[in-house]
Image (cartoon, rainbow, N blue to C red; front, side):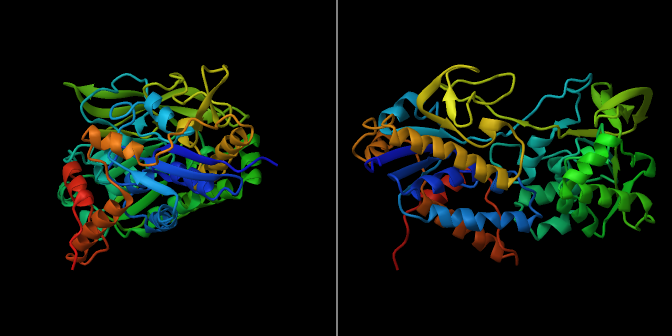
Length: 459
């Protein structure tokens, strides 16, 4: 039995991955662990605040459980701080026994086909950042295209397609800011086409997301019966996963039903692999796809049959990538921090860097759901605790818990806190209440910081 130690840990990234890791650390019974949770944005919650479509209140409810964690003692939020710019990783290692990276992934993965840089070809992450009111992204969006393509059959692709197919008034009841509503009012999209290169059993939708497409009275969801096909590996995938089987059933239901009378059509095309974005005078005028077929192993091969789809805008939802953190090893090919399941490795197959850990998408890539993030955090924090018990982390933390605050103030960094989030939250709720909705997001970065750092008025 090891003696209990007092540890100070910095967790970088206040999204679900970082908050779950923080929760496990402060509740650990082997050691007394204090966590400072660093966040680049002025507000916490990461993907849940800035990566989930605004019309998903069920998923947004996860914020409540994350909120409960941040209310706990031994956990301190420090927002509006960019690690690598405002403070270096080497400096953090002087103040903390360990550093856990949970910075997620916000950048679009590249789609290497001709025409990808044409005007009207957008990364889905940029559009998500726009409609979620992320202050780092554009405030205005060109929605003049009447026919739109979305490349990718995952939940992000569905979110993008659904937002494009809904009306602005359907979304106004959510927390979208005014600039998003004004742009969506100008949306001309009548047809939204979602493309995937394989079949129903390989689609990465979750059943609930797919089913919710049909809840809007303005959207007619269409699937061509010719796109419902399975090989032996596909049937096995259905048998192995109840969720995947439900996805197949829902797609089959869309394929056989009568068309719904609605102003917007959202068609899911399977077995169509994008090969080129067609352009004229530098602008998107179409998408060329190659028809594919299953190869017997759950994969797809081209058939040599090509189709040109007339569209004026294309959204690439083919996955996210993480950004490197200055001073931390990074695998450029996989776009993750090299790790052995938790420890940061000096190189892809190197030895662990003492005191550095990774969790979430920066560790394993942008795959899995919230449940995967929880188990992922446990794996990482278990390694950290084991290292502490083995005496590998002792004696490196600065004794003064407020020394880091002194450093931030010395550098005149306008950091935000958990109390500051309460103030920003109250302001957003007040803005929403004035319009009969729960919240309206503040989208300007400096305005967010101003509310979060305002001196509370004593009554």
